[in-house]
Length: 88
Image: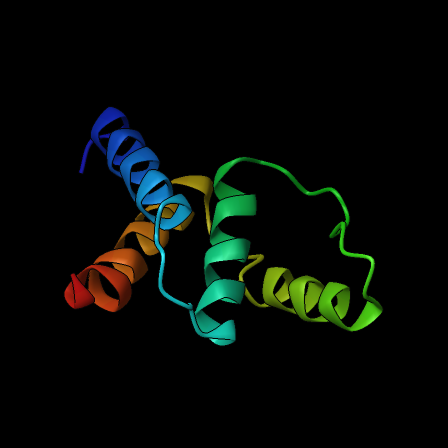
């Protein structure tokens, strides 16, 4: 998948998640969170007021830390297509 095509598919997947109305399982949300942060090159600390949530988010980022930005976009799109779009 070309870089521009990857970016477009990623942005479409992000828009889909942002408009998704059903509950998303926590483990899936954490993976999406990590892939999104890597894809956007946003390595700021998690911003939750709940320390436990910040710990889960930080752990998700640590688990995905060795993937490239492009790979993070691909993983995000794949998760959305296999886990969320199948319900629609």
